[in-house]
Length: 228
Image (tube, rainbow, N blue to C red; front, top):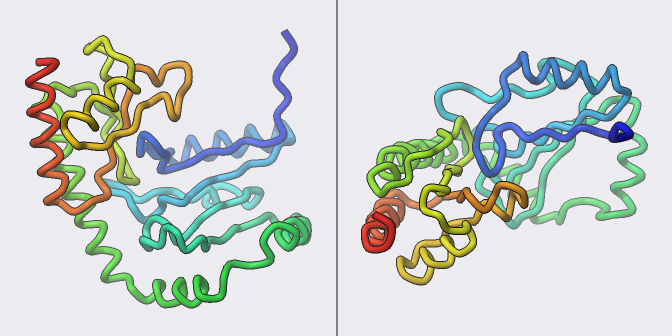
């Protein structure tokens, strides 16, 4: 079988749906491999700033030959404003400029003004992060109590990826049941992994703490009635 020919390598850290992060050695190894293979290296760092026990590492710490993608959507809570930025290798700047001007010209003016204001709202952003951290703590403690024990603890972002294979039900069916009978929305793993996602679900905790507590209570009642 012929080797797969790649033009680029795209990574995301923290990642969606798992919230896991790559450390500096792993990033260095990937950057070295991309350089050796003559392919582009792209680092999606859109969840940077939302991390817990340790800070996320930017790919720029290990190489300048990287495209870094970031946005105001996550840490700055500006989802929907559609404003972000790229860090591009110097010799590719003009190529990216030409591509961008034929796709979108620039972000809307009002989004740019809002983003400038958001840069001065660090205290508010850290309060949001404290809410995520508490919600994460509640989820990691509460999910095993409802029978969901196979969890990948997230390093960053605001998701928990869990294995539900022991319940013998497809993740889409499971998610539909939870929505219909408990009124709790979760995402089937098949949305992320068409091969193994039938056994996994993603749970977001980017809500108020009261909503997370209520959601866990509803999920517990559902699981006790149907699977435990």
